[in-house]
Length: 254
Image 1 (cartoon, rainbow, N blue to C red):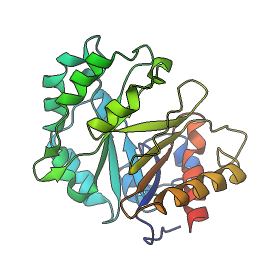
Image 2 (image 1 turned 90 degrees about the vertical axis):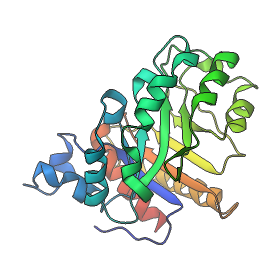
Image 3 (image 1 turned 120 degrees about the vertical axis):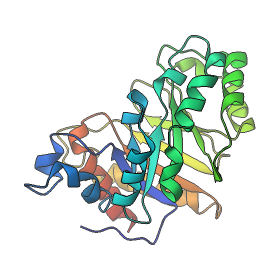
Image 4 (image 1 turned 180 degrees about the vertical axis):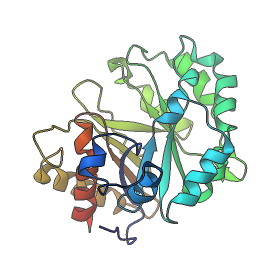
């Protein structure tokens, strides 16, 4: 199944591309593991890279990902955890610089949003969070960076939080999950959605009727302006169903 290139303002994908169960329900039988990114990137329109959260990669790795994927494909990168898993965020400057300078610019036009994921135990502290946002660079080389904040503590449902994120040009993840807050910013140009309620009993993780509603919402979002974009990732939950859910959404979007 190939993908159409007629709507590059709505990106749909999964988290990563290496997962054992996908070798029996997504990848063709016998496909070499080294060819999995090549295959996945031709069924999906984006992938959120989780490995960058745990490990530091060299420029050659980003260049390899760039060269293995088609021209209209985009990677969203999860920033290294050393920048966000800390008591005082204001001290994250060196870790932020190390991640941004690790070679991510090698992705070129395939570099999508950078996701800064915070621990579920990290509460909202406005002064410290502002200090962290001040540390985020606007560019790497000649590429403008887009920063997405994945906050997981209920205290971020605070009237100060969204205006603070907007002031620094950041988008907030909208999470469909029983565990984490669902924060939506209607004023942002970028909608970044992580769908985490997939169930193994449903072949597509989410029922097709629910996927159709997410498709309708994505279309409505981009219809509000030419600069509006949507990224939707089927992630976590019943991860074995994620590719089928993403392909169903891509098919529904046409």
